[in-house]
Image 1 (cartoon, rainbow, N blue to C red):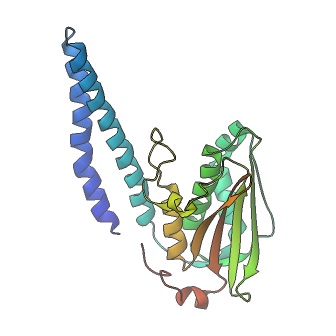
Image 2 (cartoon, helix red, strand yellow):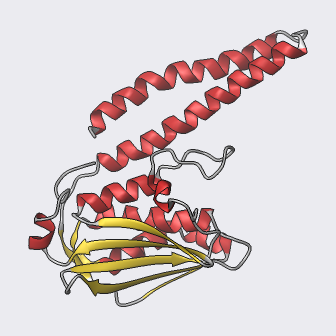
Image 3 (cartoon, rainbow, N blue to C red):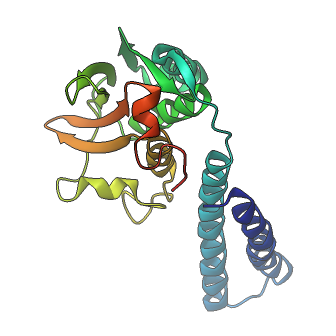
Length: 231
């Protein structure tokens, strides 16, 4: 998907949506004797405008991810995880969470994009934690006759829907009617595909696990669908 097109779309939509919300606020402020029924209708208009702004913010985040340059090289995956954890230090501390990872492999990929991927996955676990102390464990192992790496990101949060857990990757997916539209996991899947890999979601008895499969070498990555393309 073209990042420039998304930016133009966002620019053209932000103004009308913001004006709807602002005009509703002005109407209530400047008309103190507004009938209660009309106030309720204006409140619904303002709520719809806010919901639309939340969608636009999600699309903006996706446009930023799509617009990232793709500059692959061999690097230690631990460096991307270190970067993600550093960006989320305050949120991790506030949640009393623990993020553990050891012996992550050297991969062929874009370090900046992989940092974004782990930031989104760790951030997702922080948002959907349970009442227990949150633990996020990241590990890696070779699979497919040692041609791929499988990196698992597991947590003990509220888990995933048992029926069709892959729907969490849908653009603008919501956990419930009152939640903001999500885009983080869609971004993660986009980055995985760009690297010739695959990201899947697996429900656990107490939590969730995301499994990221990546080719072990530059040659393998070049041969995978999506290795040099977008969505």
